[in-house]
Length: 383
Image (tube, rainbow, N blue to C red; front, side, top):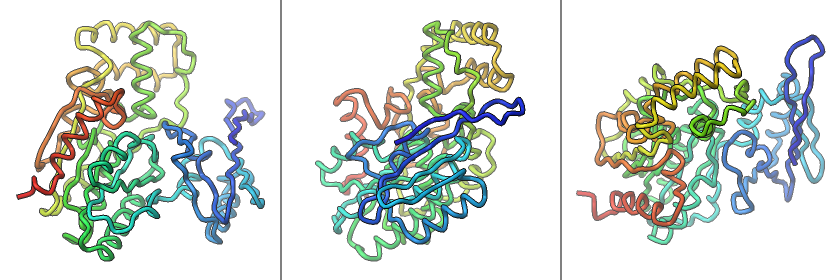
């Protein structure tokens, strides 16, 4: 259960939203789905469980969050954990209660071919819901990784590196490939370039819409928010009064075009034994012929509602963003950015949106992308 409340400080400041969440407990584990569904873009279902062990470390972490003021209050009962916190603290709480993990690790039993699936910003275990069964039908076990994705990538990368190395030691004859969407590609790059060559057992890395060159749209909460804003503007919808809200949509530094952290990360080359396959999308929501109209509509929107200057600046940036234009971007990442790496084995551009690269709208679209990926990671394709 999740409840949203508005709490006012009483001193004239804008009210801040307070959130109350209950996480069910069963057999010594808690279900983090109610927490993961807050600002993560994709709702989980009964097939996308997020159970974590309720350990002494978890209890200590909650008490420390309370002491630090991150949690307003919490209570652990026999059947649920009750949490109350300010919405601005969601990232800190998710980082503690939703640690990186392979959600279906219990189903892995040493299969010969494993595809590690890593979601991106605003993603979840459901990101690859079309991919997972399709690649499993073709002989690949889909090992799905989840992680808190609105913060630094070092902890997810450390987890991925450590777990892949452990699995490779235990199953030396298993071949691992990674299929990563958006920010997930940078997580994988961090993990693979900071590991001794061959220690992870990974032979191929496939990235879909990974912003190697950053994204000028990183100031928006997510590709979903960005596309929604663009489409509403193009349809002349100037009545949406949430344009003043910046919510939890602050940019992750590593996604900004000028990010020093990302440049340093990509300066670390992948091991020579790992083949890189890059996929970009050019199905942005704005057709080139409508670009001028789109720019004019942005100014009309700003003039009518007079949003905060920071948000007005963000809106104006849309008018010049290649990420949004069909043929040059997927709505969140430009084709140039998604292919801005020095060395790759293969490259493909699909006429898809950023989300559509991994969640196509129909079976034929899904088959096209999946077939291309499988053709590249097929053992027969290696020299």
